[in-house]
Length: 355
Ligand code: AFP
Image 1 (cartoon, protein in one colour):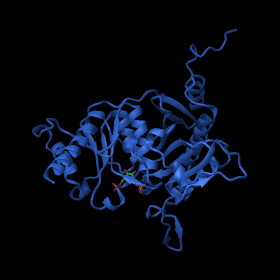
Image 2: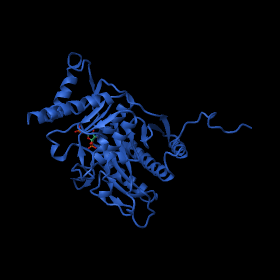
Image 3: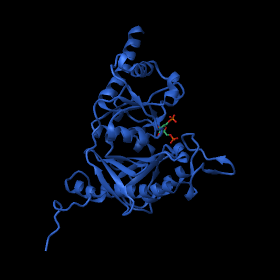
Image 4: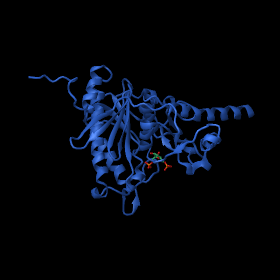
C-alpha cells in the first residue's frame, strides 16, 4: 500500500494548507491563521454576491425613497458596499480572534461585544474598493489589514488602531475579476491564491510574487493633471516625453480606477500606481485612505520587492492621526517609485532654497 507523502503528491496547495505550513514554520500563530481563514471565507461570500451581478438584485445605489445612502467618506454607497460590509462584520464578530474591527464604510471602529470571545487582533477593511465600477462589470475588490491590539486593551477604541503600516501583521486583498484571487502577506513574501469555484477553495497559484524593479507602465487618473502639484506635473511630463525626453524610454498608461485591479496588475507585471496630492483633495490630505488602502497595499508591494511612498515619506512609516486619514500614494516598481520621490524631494529642496 502506498503511503501519502506531500512530496509525491501533485495536489494543489490550498490556503488552509499554506497557512498551516506557515504556522508549523513558526511564522504565524493559530489565532492569526484562523482570522485570515475567516476573512477569506467572507471574501468567498462577497465573490458570490458580486458574481451574480444584475441577477442577484445587488447592483445600484443603496438608500431608499430615492435618497442615496452616504458613507463616512462622503461617497454614495452601493448596495454591494453595504452587503460586503455586513458580510465581513458578521463573519468576524464571533470568531474569537479579534478585539475590534474598523471599516472604511463606518464612522468608528467597533469593539467585539462582551457576549463574544475576544482575541488579540484588530482588523481593518475596505469591504468593496472600486465600487463605482460595479455597475459596469469591472473588477472590484476587498482590502484588509491586521494589527495587534495593544497590550492591556480589552475594549479598543479608534485610537488603538492608529498604528503605522510597519505594525501590520498581515495584509491582503481579494480581487473579484474574471477569476477571484486572494493576495496575502504575513510579512514573509506576497503570495497569490485563486478561488477554485468548483471546490470552493483558494489554491496557491503564485508563491513569492516579485515586482520587476524597472517599468515602462504608469497608472494615474490623467484627468486630474491640471490639479496636481508641480513635482507631479514635472514627473508625468517627463514620462510622456518618452524616448525623446529625459527618461529615455516610452511609457504606456493604464487606469482601471479600482485600486485592487491596478495594484494586482503591478504585482503581476510591474508598473507604478499613483494617486498624488491635487488641489481638489489637498484639504483632506489626498484621495486614498491610509489605513484601509495605502498601508495594506504598501505592505504587499514591499513584500514583493517593490516600494511605496507618499512622494515624500515611506508609506509604512506614516504615523496615522485618524482612522479615515487620506494620503497621496505612489507604489510599485522600486526604481520608478524612487524616481517619482526624487522629483518631489528636488522640488521641495529648491523651494526651501528659494525661501
Ligand atoms: P470607489 O470605491 O469610490 O470606486 O473609489 C475607488 C478608489 O478609492 C480606488 O480604488 C481607485 O484607485 C480610485 O478611488 C479611483 O479614483 P478616481 O475615480 O478619482 O480615478
